[in-house]
Image (cartoon, rainbow, N blue to C red; front, top):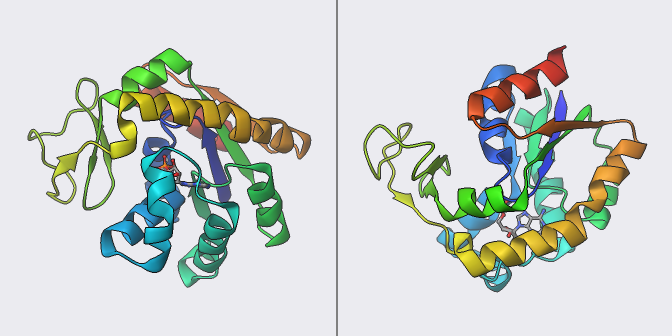
Amino acid sequence: MNIIMLGAPGAGKGTQAAVLCEHFNIPTISTGNIIREALRTGTEMGLKAKSFMDAGQLVPDEVVIGIVKDRLQEDDCKAGYILDGFPRTIPQAEALDKMGANIDYVIDIEVADDVIVNRLSGRRVCEKCGRPYHTESLKPKVEGVCDDCGGALVQRKDDQIDTIKNRLDIYHKETEPLVNYYKEQGKLVVIEGQDTVADTTEAVLKAIEG
Ligand code: AMP
């Protein structure tokens, strides 16, 4: 099963990807997490991506396409995978098609912009494993500590208010055209983002499993 999670930043792609990853026992490939890890460890790719990422802009297509191409060749992707945050532009989607990726479902989680701004400004993530939390709606058991791995919860630099607005603008301009792209391929499943994570998960699983 090969799945793409589509939707604005903060729509809940990462959270739903984590659920699907466990449910189907397939890996999640998050280009954002891969780039953040490269940045943390100071690789050349990380350094190249830093200024784009900090400003909430997209990293150039050729960089992310290269990342995904390499990652999809690893053994754990043979039984399927979930792409979270890729593709984000039409050229990226075309490159994925050229790689021969057989995508089964494109799950588009739709959430209004004002809800997104509220969610992202309250988002905290584990600096070790990337698991997302929220200051009001998705608190960890112990404040500031990841339930899964004990890592510290931090606010992403690009979750600050001006950067969030910039990311939303870019989403509407560059990424939203993918909705039609995948609709035309007959792969699109639109899910209205619900108030709770559990309700959204139920809708996602129902769309996939019937
Ligand atoms: P995310 O964690 O998915 O919100 O990604 C964080 C940031 O990483 C984005 O704002 C971009 O700067 C960069 N990024 C992640 N995925 C992509 C992609 N597919 N194309 C371009 N830039 C990306």
